[in-house]
Image (tube, rainbow, N blue to C red; front, side, top):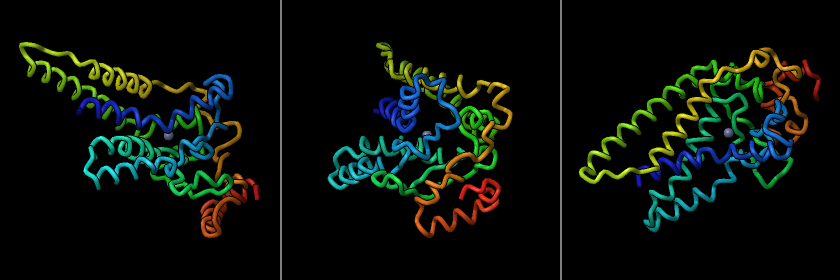
Length: 236
Ligand SMILES: [Zn+2]
């Protein structure tokens, strides 16, 4: 159960970002996705409320004591493995309160630790994110996880002695972690270190559609928070 759980948590934690492939198909190639691809803003896969059925299923499994440890897997993967990290470590943050059924209604973005990356998107975001403390910590965490999993695997193999069984799932998890580490350690091209052509904060912060889609109270807070930016852009 342990290794399947780790594998499944890793799988579910990637799910919200599958919208990148959808975006890639729509644009005719992943390389064509530029700073306008702001999936935290417009993609339904990045609205946490969409995944609440997994929470409900987990609660039901808990009430009936029907394998709750299995049912908690998607909840951990999606909410803790993805949305929590997106809330902490990315410039846009996440609209936790966005109702996916109301097209033009928006919620406030919740973002923490964003000062270096906010307002940047796509490769420009990536170039800055790589320099953050959070990125370095995640690379170290991935490396430590890969080492722990290997030690555990060796330990398991010895435990099964004299009939050592090789479990291919350990290999999958190791490959996944190494691929993550490889991409995590890549250096961004020079051109993306510069300021984007459209400028920083060319996003929901100044988009009238987003601002008008906020509730009265949230609009007031938004206008207050970004008053200097909005005055500069004269967007509204
Ligand atoms: Zn994401």
